[in-house]
Length: 161
Length: 161
Image (tube, rainbow over all chains, first blue to last red):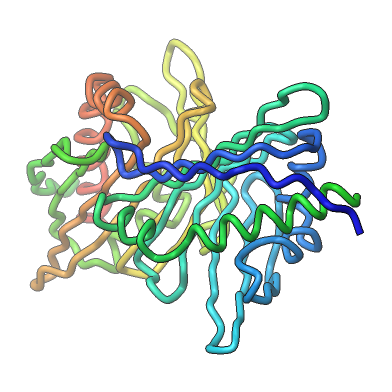
């Protein structure tokens, strides 16, 4: 079993606008990090906390496509869905995001990948919502567990692929 | 020819978040106002300023669908595109919006229709972007001409349909 290096994840609340910004480096080239975000078989393996199983219900990863997945743990099932505004291979993914338990809440998510050279990549993911209350509620929800554990699983996938 | 009443359009810059909010009443029931936003033949007739011709290039008005149209005037052609995050008939349309001349700029747009009774409807359209500079640039662009003239054309369509 490969032992991957786990970089620290920064999760930052923007002071001026209702944005959460997540910054993380990976010891893998942008092509591999991008593929792990658009290939549904790979997404299902790493996204979310370790306590959760992920089932991809619909996945049409192209500009103008849409997606839906269901996370399940011992307590229940949680559906999430959105549309892909733009996919720019190895550079950018812009999509919408709704947790179906709060169907009127929508985030606009932007994922940017930067080639740091030597097979390393910096990922910056921003999530924009329409109120600071909503943003701060998201930050207080324990989301960092899923983010951190998900990226650790992603490190492992990148190291062995 | 029917002479429709033209209500005033409010265009408001939110003080706390980078949102433009547009509020407008129509002397028509929500069903008709909604249809005029999802039927591409109707959209092409009213959207944008009077000086502009609108050509719908792609229009898949369903949750998870996408859209593209091209506006042309004497000076050139301007493409716009996005995806439909959610369509909730006669109530809500959530979509993304990009002007292709500025392909990294994305707005999250939410259109809410309220039944005011007596065949009247209030429309509230919010456009959320990721910076106040971007929002204020949009407000300073002369966008109110297209909004006002577009809704006057829409009044006329609603009055004769």
